[in-house]
Amino acid sequence: MSTFENIKRVANERGLSLKQTALKAGLSENALYRYNQGVEPKYDTIKKVADALGVSVDYLAGDTSTPTPVKSHNAQPVELDQVLSEEGMAMFDGQPLSDDYKKALLTMLNGLKDSGQ
Image 1 (tube, rainbow, N blue to C red):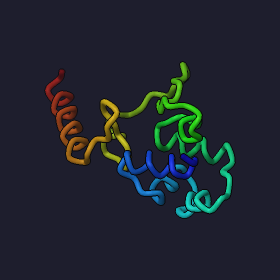
Image 2 (tube, helix red, strand yellow):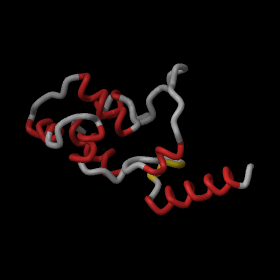
Image 3 (cartoon, rainbow, N blue to C red):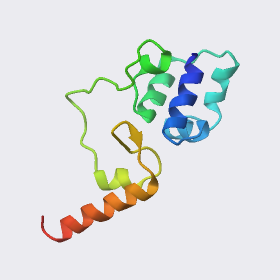
């Protein structure tokens, strides 16, 4: 599979269109379509897309079958309420969470916080 096909497949698995993926990666909304026309993406671009999709650059390039990027020891903490409130990808057990599940989790966490637990 080409890098473009891998990007398209992973984006689809995450419930994202190519336009949404590009915007999430900080690219123009039609940037990814160029890679279907034989333009070879630069490493920096693939890195942005890989980060937006939560996979490694090697996975998008087809160099590994392991989708998860190696975790850095310097990883920044993530505000779970923000992740669950935003559009885009939140995953559990390798599968994207639906908006309904994200809302239910956010409601449950807020309930626990309000009850002092």
